[in-house]
Length: 126
Image 1 (spheres, one colour):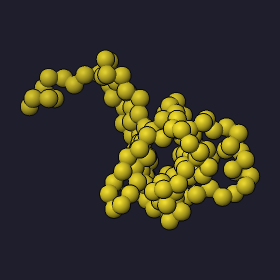
Image 2 (cartoon, one colour):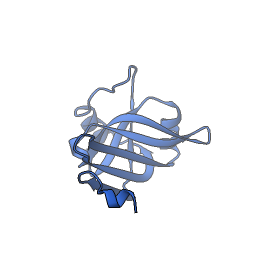
Image 3 (cartoon, one colour):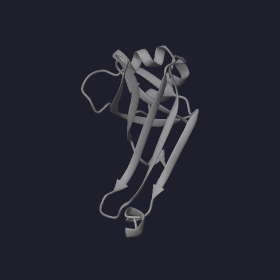
Image 4 (cartoon, one colour):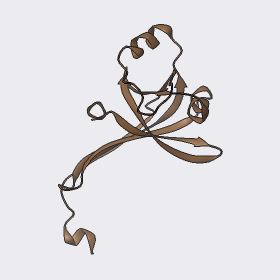
């Protein structure tokens, strides 16, 4: 499912608080990869911090869709061959500015769910 969308949310720690930011991403070698500039996201990657990534595709009119969450350690990609491979396939970041670092999110825990239609009245009001 993650391969069908290009934007998700990266959850990491900044100044001891949880932070959520939208990021564009790719699935590369079975793991989530995103580009970052510097700051807290790069710091999380270089320290191997545990982060979460969430993406979804929801249709509010039909009450359908899906959501996937990945939790794992963030790591800076430093292998030159892999960097060349990624640079050739990665879309430009949505936010202005350079994003020179590629971060991999390990898939240590993956959860998801599909949503199918509106809830029945008896599900909402027992």
